[in-house]
Length: 461
Image (cartoon, rainbow, N blue to C red; front, side):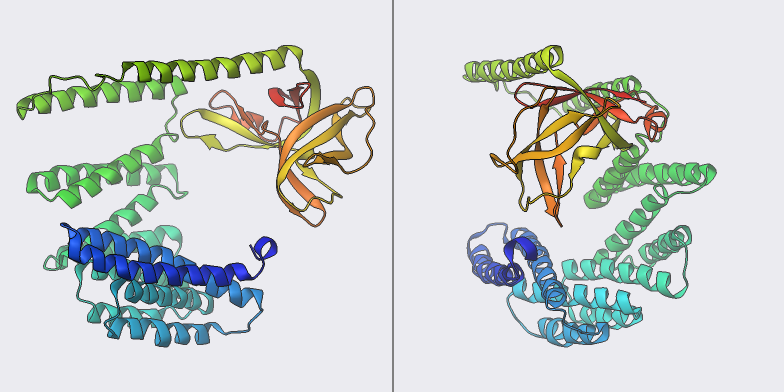
């Protein structure tokens, strides 16, 4: 940001935080006087402002320090954040958005400083001080979570526990806190969330297959039991949170199961039908009566127009791609693939071409670019060193037989180099074949239209 906007960006970020806090003070007063549900509305609003303003201030502080190479020790930064931000905002009666934004800013800066110089044990005293002073339920809940985060950092610095042992300790500590602190709902719910997050993390880290199965099974059983028990007890926040964690496990395991995409699709279709049937049964038991009028009344023409518009757009895209496949110029590009995954669509490879990075350019901005490809003796099309950026050629260009123009977009540039994407970087493959493709394919066959648009056809060894 300093490169493109100048150092004023960080000053502007700081001013934006100040304006945000000033405006929020007036809005909080307005909500206090006019909002019927002012308690929850104000709480959500203050939490949102606190988060945004804290991020702005922390980013601007560290940005200015790094930009101007200010040599400030982490201990000094910690003391300044504690003395000038945390303590004043805790002890004074400033407006809520200002108070909590400055408080969280000081704590975040203090925690970052303590992590760098490994004196996180001091943060316990700061958090304990704020926790003792602030009596509000929401504030105590947040600071309990911060206390748990600092505990994990402290244990990682002092005992040097591995991720597995550290998460187990956090699960046990929060489980004990949940059982012992039943008189404090804020802390108890904080312990519930922290323990569940730590237990969920155990299902995601790289462990042996047996431990992975044990933790997944344990998490599934505990989450299911919590949904049932808390629902029976009428503890809405707890059973909804348990249900969220239950679904998080299902999503996390979605690709760990050895299923094909069609099996997963059928499973979700069956689950969807099952949920609809259960919902209909519960509606009938509760005496819910469906309203007689249709929600489509008076809207049929509009819905029909939207359907036709969508169908026309899809048809145009299909026609354009098929025309390009039939009539486009075939080029072979050198590439290097990696193997990520698509949550809903299966395996795919994200392709990094040799032409994805252009060297020795004068491009210093993002925008559309057209490069000239020429075939080498091996039959691979390579970047010729000639390009057109924002409508201007970098050198005088005369078309030669076999030249192919390919359109792309510059996404970043640095040190006379430019990173370019061409819209042919993603290629979906059959599930379970990602490891077979990764690192083995060397080239990609691409069709390029007369207008310079490319479409990926297939990969080659």
